[in-house]
Image 1 (tube, chains in turn brown, cyan):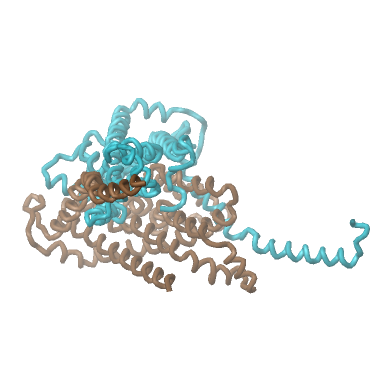
Image 2 (cartoon, helix red, strand yellow):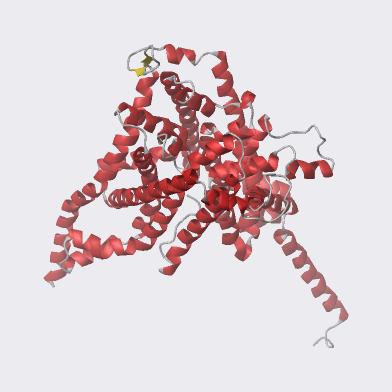
Length: 298
Length: 294
C-alpha cells in the first residue's frame, strides 16, 4: 500500500530536480541562436550608426549620417513603393487564396489533402527556378500574353515584365501559399452549420459569405496577411527578374549597398528601416489578435 | 406500395422531396466563381514549372518555340565542371546544416516543452526571431557578423548561417510532436529504475524518430533550395548551386538553367514527398504538420 505513495514522493522530488536536464537540453541551441542571430542583428543596429573610412571599409562609431541619408526622397520613394507593392500583393493574395482555400476546404471532399499537397509541394521547389519560370510565362511573347492577345484582352503593346505589375505578379506567385495555408486551416475549422444557419435565415449566398463565413475566418486571413507581407517586403528577386530599374524595392537597395555600392553603414540603416516597418506591422497584427481574443472571451 | 398510394399523397411527398432537394442543392452547390478561380490558380501555379521542364528538353535555345526533344541541355549540365562542383557544394552544405540543426533543434524542442523556467520562455522567444525576420535581414546580419569576427566568407560560413536559420524550423516542427507525448511514460520508466537520461534515450527519443527523420529530409530540401542566406554568406569559390543559378538567370539566360532547374524541382519535390511519406511508414502518428497550417 505504501508503494504508490512512495513513488509519488519520488516523482515530486524528481520533477523539482528534473528541470535541470531540460535546461541542459535547451542550452546549446539557445546559445547558438543568441550568438549567431541576436548578436548579428545587434551588429546591424550598431553599424547603422557607424562610418566608413576613406577606403570604404566600415568603421564603428557614432555617426548619424546614414540614418539622415534615409530621409533622402530617393530612399523614401523606394520605401513607399515597397510598401505599396507589398500591400497590393497581400490584397491580391487574399482575393486569390480565399476562393481556392474555400473550394478545397468545403468542396474538396476526399481530395482535400491531395489538393493542399499539390499547392504546398511546388512551393518547396527552388524559389529562383519558380520565379524564372514565371518570368518566362509573363514575358512579352510568353504563353500568358499570347493567350490574352488571342482572346482580345491584350494588344501587341501590353507588357507585364519590366512593369510594376510584373513585380507584384512575382511576389504573389512567390508567397501566395503563405495565405492559402492559414485560410485553409481556418475554413477547415469553420462549422458548416453556421453557413447553413445563415442560409436558413434567408441570407443570400453573398450576405451569408460576408456576414458569416468571412468574419469567422478573420484570424486566418490576418495571419496570412502577415505571413505574405513579411517576405514580400524583404524580397529583391522579384523586382530584379520581373521589374526594371524603376521598380526596385528596398531589398534591392540593401543588396546594392552591400555588394555593388559597398556602403555598409547605409545598408545597415536601410535594413534597420525595413525591420522597423515590419515590426510596426507585427505589433499591429498582435494587437488585433489580442483584441479578437478578448472579444471571443467575452 | 405505389399502387396503394393515392395521387394526392404521392404529389405531396414528391413536392416535399423536391423542396428538400432544392434546399440541400443550395447549401451544397459548388460556388462557380470560387471553383473557376481555383482551376485558374492551379493552372497558373503549374504553368511556370511546366515551362521550365518542357524547355529543358528543347533542341534549340529558344524559350518560346519547342522544336523537338533532346537531352542536349542535360548533357551540357553534366559536362559543366563549375555547375557540378556547385552541386557538390550545395549537397555538402545541406548535409551539414541538416545534421547540425536537427541535433540542436531537437534538443531545444525537448527542453522548451519540458522546462517551464524563465530561460525556457526566453529561449522560446529567441527561437521565433528567424521566423519573423525576412531572409534578407538574416543574410545581411550573418554576413556582418562573419566579417566582424574576421572570418573569410566560404562554404563554412554558409553552413553556419543555414544551421542558425534551420534550428527554428526543426524546433517548431518537433515541439508540437514532443508536446503530444505523455511525460508520464517517462516517469513510468524511471519508476522502473531507469535514470532520467535512460528514460529520454530509451522512451522519448524512439517516439520522435519518424518526425525527426521527416524533418531532416525537409530541412535538407529547404537548405538545398535556399538562395538568399547562401547569397549573402558564400565566398567567391565554390558557390552553392542556387547562387550559381541566380547569376546565370541575371546575366543572360542559358537553357542549361532549364535542365538544372528541372533536376532541382524533381529533387525537392521527391524529398518533400518523402518527408510527408516517412511518418506513414511508422504508422499514422507523428506526421509532419505541413498541411494543416503552421
